[in-house]
Length: 292
Image (cartoon, rainbow, N blue to C red; front, side, top):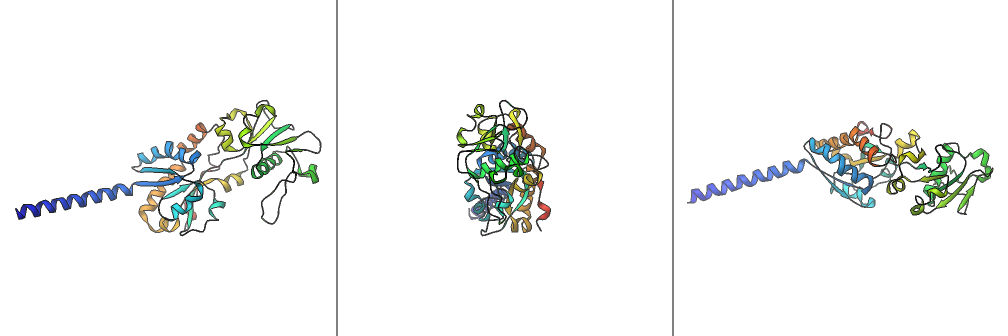
């Protein structure tokens, strides 16, 4: 009986060890990512997850408030996050340094119209928060609708040289060009899509166009400067030290990075988000060679 008991205990112990090893092996194939809901978590869940499954990995995705995501990765709760661009990541000073392994997509401001097929002078509605309003005016300048030279002191926003953020130079809800041909009205974000027919053109933030299901056929222009797209494309952020020194972690991150740089992901963005999001060779940029 004693021998049988010892044998049973040994067998149980071996089974336990085997289960533990199996569990550990299984865990090493799990990649945990926190992300913003749209489009980040959606793309991970409905496109990237299947790519990783074919590679033998299980992807676990949690939607997390953007203010918590960098700390969550730095503290080891997640392997990576997907919500920010490099300029924002560079402001992070947490317990561990985070780096980007790739850039994936860019969320441009677009100009849409129900009645026009090309940009011109006319009536425009733009989002009434300062950041998006300035972006809209910058886009109108880039596309030649308005000119700093022509506007002079009537130019609608400041261009600080001290690194501070631009601000609007007018306090009313409307701005009119000096020739009177272009009129821009500040409109609450939640009213922009419903007001499309009231203006010749609407400058819509990316998420506004997506949630309002405004089709790409109505888009006549968008932010497409290559430097801007590359600078502010959303990234996959990971722990630098672990990526350099932990081979298992690096392998998982490399598989995930390769998936985010794939044509499958680019195609998913194109077909799912009404052409509002940029995901192509201008935004899908491999950054791993810079991690040294």
